[in-house]
Structure formats: structure tokens, C-alpha cells
Length: 262
Image (cartoon, rainbow, N blue to C red):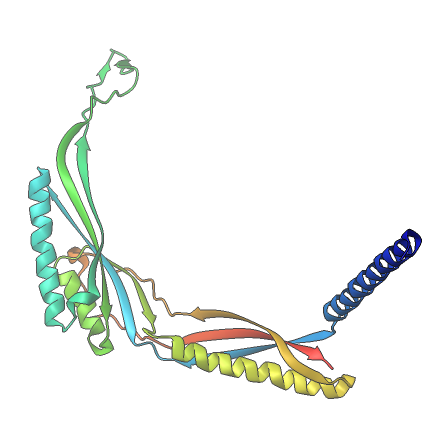
């Protein structure tokens, strides 16, 4: 085989490789274009589920004051133990009682310089009241708690008893469901059924055929009844426990189903 024939064969093979490469790239591009231009349609649905709450969460705090930090803390500890014992007697489990914050603050006092007047009863000295250097006159301890109540029949008497046992503030009463997943699942099922119903209704009206679901999206939000009320300290202890109806909790699920169009 002479040199000319070898050259012809070489360039022929090179041209064939180039042609096959171009064909392969065009084929891939067509497949990508086909997949990216697939027609889809989306349908939304909503589901709501309701249930009575099974947990009440209550925040409260105690404040103790004394001339020294140690005395204030000792007084706070004594009152805290008294309240904890009261809650345990109401069948509140220890795991359902927790401290949310514990703060110690110094208390200050300042004395103003006596004011002097001239014969015309016009303030002469000082030109304005001037306080002296602040002086620590005591300490205040503020401790916050959160308790979970599972027996709603005792809730009113517990709130009443907390105040009678020295609690200074009772607030942020809220009702919730301890395990809301069952309620979410119920709402999700209703939302999916709602979206599928809309898909079935629309496909007949506009004359399309739906393929498989290619995307799913959901958004969950819930409403927990929160009384948010506040009750005063021992000076305003109620004669009768407050009425605290728990109502119902609501969970809403919104879903979006995306179908291929055949």
C-alpha cells in the first residue's frame, strides 16, 4: 500500500469519526430538549384537621428580695421547693416542671442633695436635684418556670394554687397537642384528595390526559389556642379558680401536585 492510499484511508476514518461525533451530540441535545420541554400541570389542595388539645403549658415566675444576695437566693429556693411540692401533689410529673430562667439583680438607692431656697422662695442650690452615687441596698431574685398540665380538670385549681403558694406572675397559658403528627397526616390526606379531585375535574374540561406525578410540595401550619392571660400575685389571689376552656386546635396542610401531560 503506497503512501497516497494510506493518507486517503487516514482522512476517511477521521471524517467518519467527526460525523459520528456530531450525530451523537445532536441526538443527546434532542433528548435533553425533549425532556426539558415536557408539558406539566399543577393542582393545589387544602386539608384541615381539628382535635382537642391534650396539653396545657403554663409559665409563671417568683420574685424574692433580701438585703444580701445569699438571703434572696435562699428565700427563692425555699419558695421554689414549696411550689414544686404543690405541683407534685397535683400529679404533675417532675419531667413536666422546668426552670426557664434565673436572674439575680442588685437593688439601688440614691439620695438627692437637699434643695435650698432664697428669700424669694426661688431654688438657689443646687440648680437642679443632684443624686448621690447609687448605693446597693438589696438584691432581687427572679426565677421563671414552665409546667405542663395533662389533666385539664385540675388546671383551674393549679393556677389558683400557684398564686396562693407565692407565685408572683402567671402568664402565657397555651393549649397544644403533644403528638400532632396524626393530625398532620389526616390533614395531608384531605389536601391530597382535594388536589386530585381538582385534577380529575379539570382534565375532562380542557381535554388533557394526565400522566404520573412528577413533583409534590406541601406547606403545614397550625393554630394552637393561646390564652396568653396573666394572673397577679398573692395580693390579688382569686377567690375562685379561673375558667380556662381549651377549645380546639387546627392544623392546615396545603399541597401542590404536579402531573405530566401525556
